Length: 381
Image 1 (cartoon, rainbow, N blue to C red):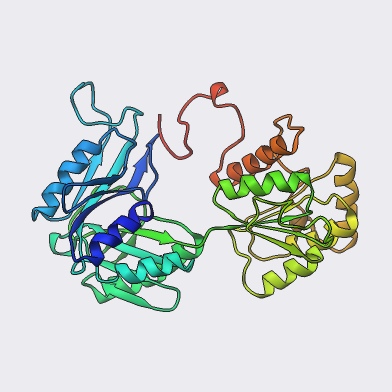
Image 2 (image 1 turned 135 degrees about the vertical axis):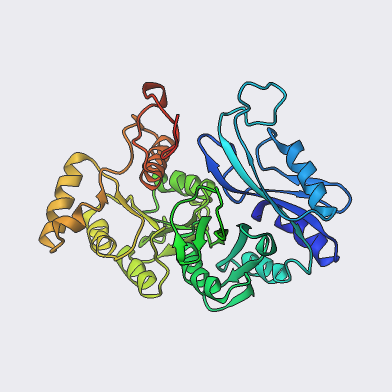
């Protein structure tokens, strides 16, 4: 919804109805991720995309039907099985798209959701996308401290509050299944009996990338981090280097001793499982204290440190002497990055970003051309 939120809100505020088509699940090499959306406006306008062009016409037609009074619908688009005129994805993947009517009656909380998203605060929308017809399109809006809306079942609402907050904390979106006796597992959208499938779309603030060491490599990494959607902080104790003009890609530049800054951020609750920490100082008086803090954090997404093999061995020895355990030390990615043969700051930033992506997504970092089988983890050929 995020990619069409401004236009959706504009029609909603005018009391006009539009049809919202949302990718709720993907299989194999699908072109757009869950949450990608397309609108069919009150005047027949088309805004956004669910497939990059492959099935937009079919989704547009479904949107028109929903606006004309048809019930919300969950539609799967996949391989055409040899029919050149069938509606299908040329990439060989599969999309599950949910199409519903949005207006102030069907989604009275939309204004609050938009306000929360614009303020950079977390909120999630849980929508029933499959199940008994009378439940389709019902939704629960979940903030960290309150809930609005209802799905038609107090018991389901109670389960959704807990499950949705868990997904919101992790910044994840996806489909959950519920049955009469409690939650079911998996995301296969084949529906049976009274089972309900709920799409949870999380609008979490951007994950953080904290870069310690305001050097030329940090300049390149800050730009790369911003490009990937991180909120980037560059921190260095040396005010002559830690300046905004030297770090144009960073959202903020902080002059402070790295370990003091990281301690304060952790105590304030601003470090979580999506946070990535990159220590680029390769100077033991800076990086050893901050790594002592980082590697002992209970929940952090990634900790990497730059340096040669010799620097790494010296750093490892100092951290061991500081009392870090083998388990804590194994959380450290050092030397930082994947083996791409990188030399320049820009190439090194790509190397570091590639390692972070590979660890987050479960990739191995090998050349796709040298592999067989599916491209994306968890899919089938």
